[in-house]
Amino acid sequence: MPPRLDLIGLIVQDMARALAFYRRLGFDIPAEADTEGHVEAMAGGLRIAWDTVEVIHSFDPGWTPPVGGQRLGLAFLCDSPTEVDALYAELVGDGYEGRLEPWDAFWGQRYAVVEDPDGNPVDLFASLG
Image 1 (spheres, helix red, strand yellow):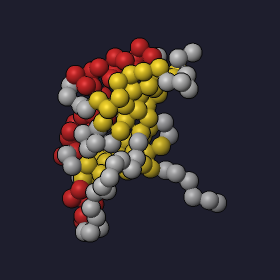
Image 2: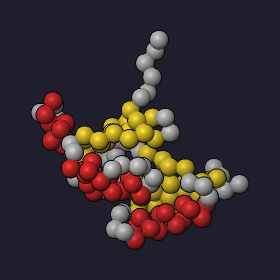
Image 3: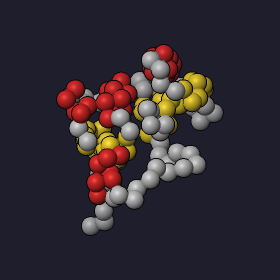
Image 4: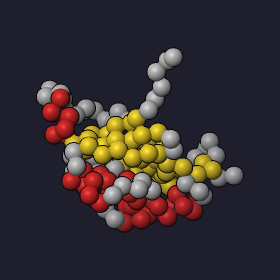
């Protein structure tokens, strides 16, 4: 049997700040997780995990963050183009960095990009049709 994708892991500087962002995107993560070094949640049948830099260094002391741009992007399907606009405005209004304001993409979607607290791009999209 070939291996199968089971988990996406993100390395974070500040667990509470990272989880606050992802809660805004619908993850049900208890408040007490904010003080943990490793947290997991389910997303559409796939696990997503957040690990602090300290946890990563506990088993890989030589780990350093990548340089020269992002290496990972997450994309979240919204129910409508209006929801893309509203969620983008809420996140940016709450101080998260907007990378690309909502626009109608040529491939038929309303699309926007905001950065999570660690600078990872998070796409918000919905079908225009």
